[in-house]
Amino acid sequence: MSEHEPRTAVTDDRPAWDDYFMEITHVVAKRSTCLRRRVGAILVSERRILATGYNGAPKGLAHCAELGGCYREKMGIPSGERQELCRAVHAEQNAIAQAAVHGVKLDNVTCYVTTQPCVTCAKLLINANIVRIVYEGDYPDEMALQMLEEAGIELVRYQPPKKRDSQ
Image (tube, rainbow, N blue to C red; front, side, top):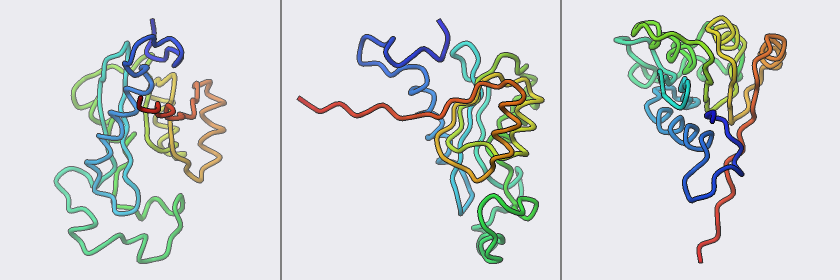
């Protein structure tokens, strides 16, 4: 069985694997120091979490709240533009970096992320041998989606399960 079983394969009250890992990804996002958007990412292979990441300043450096606010917000820069002016490292980048620091090989890995990857993260995910990306929220970056599709990475737009009525 793989970690991306269809939701219908679950016969008890336990969440399907995609639901389980996306829920954990949302918890990871709570560690974010970004003032604009909290993003979490986890890298999973064979139902095992290999690395996690959230968006925020590089380790040991001050984050935007400590510096008096988001520089891009003050400049009126829209989401998805002028990323080089952002102090934060993206969640996917931090997850890949965490795997590298700890010597974790990333082959045949699924990346769960709360927001669609940007083009920079897409390029890193491609080169890190990620084979599947499950993402929830939108991000204004069509080029990222085109590159991921061209690379043959399976893209899954996550839809949370419908809540059951209590009896």
